[in-house]
Amino acid sequence: MTAVVAERTVACRGDRASIWDAISDTERLNRALGLDRLSLERSSDATAARYLVRTVLGGLAVTYEELPFEWQYLERWRSERRMRTGPLTRLVTSFTFAPRADGGTDVGARVELTPRWPVLSPVLRLRAGQTVKRLEREIVRIDGALAAKQRPPAKVTPAEPAALARAAAALRERAPGEVAFRLVDLVRAGADVDVARLRPFDLADGWGEARRAVLATCLQGVRAGLLELRWEVVCPSCRTGTEARSTLAELSDHGTCQLCELEFALDLDEAVEATFAIAPAIRRLDLGPYCIGGPARTPHVIAQALLPAHGEARLVAPDDEGRYRLFVRGLGARPIVVAGGAPREVVAATGAGDESLWIAPGGAVVVRNATAEERHAKLERAAFAHTAATARIVTAMPEFRREFSADVLRPGTALRVSRVGLLFSDLTGSTELYAKAGDAAAFRLVHDHFDLVIEIVESHGGALVKTIGDAIMAAFPDEIDGVSAALSILRAFEAFRGRAPNGAGTSLKIGVHGGPCYAVTANGVLDYFGQTVNLAARLQGEARGGELVVTRALADAAIAAGRLDASAIRERYDARLKGIDGAIEAVRVVVGSDEGDAACR
Image (cartoon, rainbow, N blue to C red; front, side, top):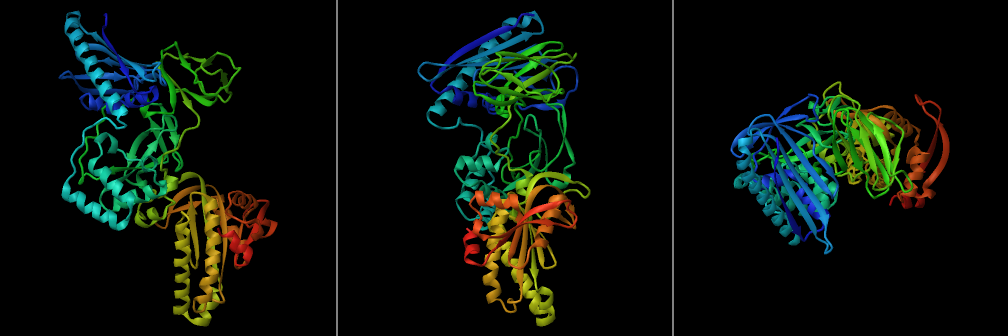
């Protein structure tokens, strides 16, 4: 049946990148257009659609297959809905973005409506014209807001004043400072679409604040009753949240993505992200969804296309040289290298592969589908700006360890962490102190030393994992921060034992190491196990009083980062450690001398 088509071209003042960013945010666009929210049901048939959608269009309840969007970054995007009920069999919306000589952008909007019965064509022609007029008005509104350096207005569900006032006061008491005021203002007045899912690092970058400070304030906001913490399972391909959990205990050791048809192992580095939602007692937001696709949802994807059964699709490579990735739903991925002098066109059979395909800037990757199922293919950046507050980062923060100590993994679940810095310290001379000074005096000195060590660990971005007798284990997102903390601890302890009653006969020895391990729940706390943990503990055992022992590689990295003065190194040697195969190139660092003081900077 012949489709009814209506289209408009709008001359915008905004540059192409700004206009693209705004219009490709289809969740926000659909809300602004007054469309109804969607109800989703998973689909697993031979079409490219992964969801059946139920909603209301033009006052009629409809069900349709939601196909993956198609787009070429900055040039065009298109969505197709195959209608199962209602007066249409097909609805296609598309946009084009053409740069103008004056720096602006010509935005083309097009709507195609295919009637289920020919008699509906005149009515649908009127409806299509009305739809593109609404799109035109919204594009003009978006362009005006961009020209005024503002975001287009959007719905704001009002906050409950008394509940907001109580939570705001509690937060400011817990986290005084500008970040808390900004967070409260956002919760009070942010558009529903902007605050439905708060990512603390995105907020920090937008506000010009330190990421760690904003994340810590969001955690305090949960305790103040302003926010709720969510753990999102993130697909490694589309990099969107596939499910959300309120506690770590609800996580399993694997996740799935319906859109990408992937099953993947969970780790705390990339696959689990901490996000925040406004507490329902403060604001009951319109969470939608109003769209489940669109380029803005996956900004790392440069081009995406439907891949017909036994057919092919063309994906245009970007102008920027570099490493990219081709992904075909359900059939895997392979690396792509964009480089000058490479072929202008390459053919890729579907399926995963380790061998890179080389393509010239602006060249075409032709993807062929040998299967009887319709799929989608995408070309994506291999590297991307990381703005996720991952579980690896959050669970190593002192604010999380203190305030969310009950939020632990399910017993028996072990999730991989690609890298964590671990610090072990031990107080020497304490056993003799108990015998010499008595239990009470020795106990007080041990606990005073804990206060000193833990305060310095936290000031360097680490968190206490546990105490073991008179020793501690602490975790850091970066092991170089652990080295800085260890040096500060050793220097501070020299002053501490000089002023503490009975402290003269004690000293500290510390080991720091970083690497991969597993996060587990042990004795009711979030703990770590694996060879990295063993090596960090063994290095601490190698240290003598007043020393830090690390691997030679970590010492060299700390020197290169300006965290360790090479003159503080007393010895470089090969250590043979219990339970560790082979010799470890180790380094002894001494603090307390002039050289040691220079190391603690």
